[in-house]
Length: 89
Image 1 (cartoon, one colour):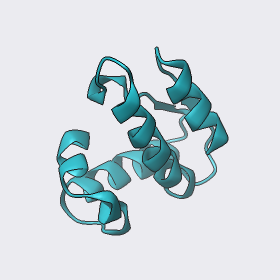
Image 2: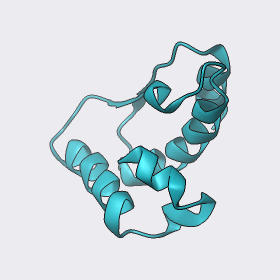
Image 3: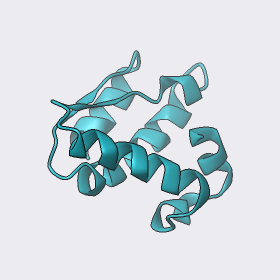
């Protein structure tokens, strides 16, 4: 689903149809169901250096925060730059 979102461009997160609607519903349902935290890992989308994952983490954190309804999230990655980006956001 996230790969489809990448193909739609940087403004895709402002829309709530198709893949973005699915991700939004998934995040909100976890929050509504009382999850302790929302796990965030975008490594599967990355190139060998992690640069694509850095961009994706930045965008994804920006939507997890409002859609997660205050539930904390856990940032996970094998790339230090991705972890730093997630924490900065």
